[in-house]
Image (cartoon, rainbow, N blue to C red; front, side, top):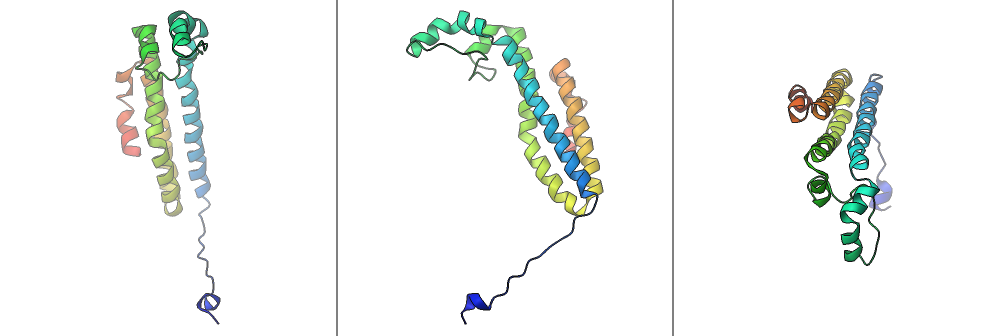
Length: 165
């Protein structure tokens, strides 16, 4: 017989602790909160870059540049530092950027946090889900502080977020 036929398949298995479900629940809670942050991040976009605003400020220029195509609402692809946001004024720019920063900051960290939680939870489920809850609540405080107060509003929660990642 050949080499391949002589080899027997062996599968390694492991058992997850019952508390691992709490790790999964906290991970899903973080994902749900992140989805809420996406919605909050998009809120100012719809409020500031209405169809009327876009038509009034950029409709003619857009039509000339793109063979008569009509400009759309919501100011895409401007992500806060482009021509549409600059035309909206400083107050609107600040409101838009606060929501965008909360969203992007979460985006920059959520994947690594979830992967670490899922891996660490295999061996240390209780510590992991408790640590995950600390991360979740610090993210909520970070979000609320940053949106309501501005950049200084994140000072209380930022160290907790950083150390719980």
